[in-house]
Every structure is written in C-alpha cells, then in structure tokens.
Amino acid sequence: MGGTGGSPNDDRDGHPATYYHATRDAFAPLPTLDGEIEADICVIGGGLTGVSAALNLSERGYSVVLLEAERIGHGASGRNGGQLVNGYSCDMHRIRAEVGLEASKAFWAMGLEALAEVDARIDRHSIACDRRAGYLFAALNTRQMHGLEEMQEEWSTLYGYDRMTLVPRNAVGEWVGTDLYHGGLSDPGGGQIHPLNYLQGLARAALASGARFLEQSPVSRLERGPRPVAHTKTGSVRARFVVLAGNAYLGGLVPETRSRLARVSSFVGVTEPLAPDLAARLMPANAAVADCNAALDYYRLTEDNRLLFGAGAGYAGREPLALRRYLGERIRRVFPDLAGIPLPHAWSGHIGITVSRIPDFGRIDPTIYHAQGFSGHGVALTGLAGKLIAEAIDGDAGRFDMFADIKHRNFPGGPLRIPALVLAMAYYKLKDRLG
Ligand SMILES: Cc1cc2nc3c(=O)[nH]c(=O)nc-3n(C[C@H](O)[C@H](O)[C@H](O)COP(=O)(O)OP(=O)(O)OC[C@H]3O[C@@H](n4cnc5c(N)ncnc54)[C@H](O)[C@@H]3O)c2cc1C
Image (tube, rainbow, N blue to C red; front, side):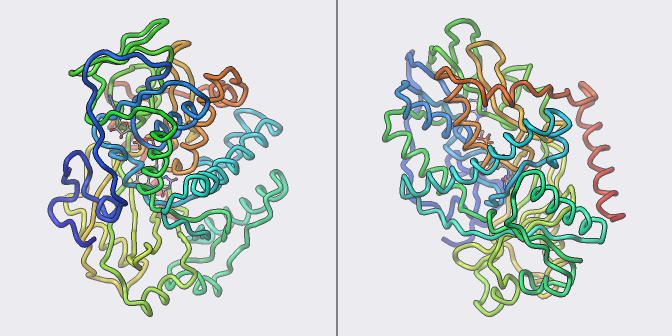
C-alpha cells in the first residue's frame, strides 16, 4: 500500500498507477498471444464486460480466448469510483420513451438483476472486494431535490421498488458531514466495491472454468466474415464469434460502434487514511455518495478509511492541468475541513457515453457482438452485458435483443465531434451551476 506518487497516469507494466492497483490482490501477469489459434469465441478487451462475457461463455462450455491490449483492468474497470448504483445512467422515462412502459419494466428488472449478479458472483467465487451496501443520491439545490422526490415516486409506483428513503436537509448530517446538500435519497440496494479486486476475482473464475486470457495483445485488425479473425502483431485468433468489449478504449477498430460513442474523462483522487473520528464525522453512514450534477462528484470511504473522491468530466484526452489541485478544490467544496489534504493517488479514466445514456449492445455482423456506452454506470451493468451476450450466442437472444433493438444516434459533429461534445458539456455544467 502507500502513495504511488509520480504523474497521475503513470503506467506500470501496463497498469495505470491507481490506489486500486496499489491495494489489489496478487494477480500474476498472463502470457501474450503467440501464433495462430482457434476458439469458439474471441473476446476483445479485459474489462468487466469482456471478462464477464468470457466467464459466462466458458461456463456454458464454449472455448474462449480473451485478448487484452494491456493488463486485465487497464481500462475504466480498474480505475472507476467503485460505486454500485441501481438503474441506468439515464432516467427511466428515457427508456420508457424508447420501449414503452411494459418493456421498460423488463429493463428495470434487468438493472436489479445486474446488482444481484455482482453479489452472486462475489459469493460463488469467494471474491474479497470490500463489498458494502448503502448509497446516497445528494441534491445540491431544490430542483435536484424535487428530481429525487419524483425518482422515488416513479421507481416505487411504476417499478415496485420501495427501498429508497428521502433524506430531508436536516438529516443529511447522518449520512455526510457537509452543509452543501439540500437533502438526498438513500438506497440500501446501491453500494460499493473495490472494482479491480472484483474484476480479478471474475478473471480467476473464468480462467478456472477454462477460458484463456492473453495480456499485452492489442488487436490491430479484425477480419470480418463468417469466421472472423482478430489479428495482433504476434498472432491471430480465428473464432465463430467475436465479442467487442473495448468500450471507450477500443479506438477505431470497428467504425460502426465508434460513431455512437463519445469518450469523456473523469478524475479520481484518494487521500491518506483519515483518523477514525474524522472519517466517522465526514461519512457517518459509510455509504457511497454521488450528487445529482451531470458533471458529478462521487465519493466513498475505502476499506482503510481513505476518502476516494471522483469528480468532473472532461472531453477525451484532456485532463485538468493540475489534477490534484482540481480534485483538492472539489473535495474542499464538500468537506472544507479537508482543504489542502494531500492526494497520494490521483488518476483519470475514459467513460464511454451514448447520446441517450442507454447502454449500446448489438451485433455489427451476425458473428460480431458488442457492448459499450454504460455512460458512467457500468460497474454492475457490464456483468449483465456479459450475461446477455452469452445467452444470445447460446441461442436465446431475447433479452440481448431488447437492448440491441434500441436505435442509438450518432454523436453530431463528425470530425468535429470533440468540439460538439465540449459545447454539450459546457451546457450541462452551466445547468449544474444554475441549479
Ligand atoms: C474514472 C471513472 C469512474 C467511474 N466510476 C464509476 C462508478 O463509480 N460506478 C459505475 O457504475 N461506473 C463507473 N464508471 C464506469 C465504469 O467503470 C465502466 O462503465 C465499466 O468499467 C466499463 O467496462 P468495460 O469492460 O466495458 O470497459 P473497460 O473497463 O474500459 O475495458 C476495455 C478494455 O479493452 C481493452 N482494449 C481496448 N481496445 C483493445 C484492443 N484493440 N485489443 C485488445 N484490448 C483492447 C482496454 O485496454 C481495456 O482494458 C467509471 C468510469 C471511470 C473512467
């Protein structure tokens, strides 16, 4: 354990230098692809989507080869906020508008199933990943508080979810030691995990069930057709099916998925362990917390009582000039007592977002499946993606096709997509500020 120091995104042997990497369980490096091999399934990308797909498919008896460009967990899955959140990144009314009320109930149920699946996997494979229950959506103004009231009503009356409790302004202190919020909504169904240890646990389970994982094997070309072939510099995998699970890290391998995905960055900083009385004062309920802004703050205490604080959203590839200063300022706004607190760990990561914020699952060819665009809400939904891909490849595509039938718009702007995204984000940030 201890500070990683150095620049925020120092790669160490293919791993980003994060708190998670510094505190993960031992996980030996895996070999690199060498030569030409065949398998039923080739999965491209070793994050939660790819590893979940590999696990579900190998459990169903398929031979699976997973190719990861760097190390398992190099992408968003090994550097996120570790928050397990119910529902989807978009509001449920967005899903209702796409699919109608009855089908939206099936989407709701699949969201719940995604969270239940995390716990089932943790139990089944004995994954030590600091799973804790408890979640607070925090309102920064009265408009957001009304939004939370409506959400509670909607989730209860339309979807039968009665577990959430409104937290009035005078009770926020039981959850978070700050004067910033106008109230909140608590959800015992949400919670937190150490995402890299969870992912590594899933990877171990997949390896134990016979899947082959190859690291530092970036796929540079995909030969499409009835028997697609994934090529790297050092070999190739010919398969009956390919699963594209590179999400915001995939780049231009397949043009069709790229235009539907925008890549934004989010930033995370971690303090030294807080004294127990300070930790208890700032986070008395030890729940995960997120505010309701589009460019939101999200935070929680780690197992060793550090504040792990995520914030903001920037457009692809750019970081605030001084990441630690930026994060320090965001932390101070919530917890003035922590002004100037050192952040031994700080990093950024890419989030893949869709226009509607509904995840984008589908087939590019009959032999090529993809899942991407969890829009900042993927720790649990990625497991569902892996499960539904396995169901579909195994002949029961009903649930996968509910997602695949949703028409995703391309991000406007073509080559000017980044400026268009910057304008959109500036708009949302302004909306956040106006309240
Ligand atoms: C900073 C941050 C905070 C977040 N916080 C939360 C949160 O608190 N709660 C939540 O629910 N969600 C959160 N998210 C979102 C969540 O992490 C993602 O939705 C989820 O991890 C996506 O998983 P994935 O497997 O689809 O993609 P990734 O984890 O990004 O994995 C993609 C993998 O594909 C590999 N790859 C790409 N191209 C190739 C290629 N050509 N060949 C081989 N391999 C390739 C990459 O190296 C990478 O390892 C956060 C994301 C970020 C970045």
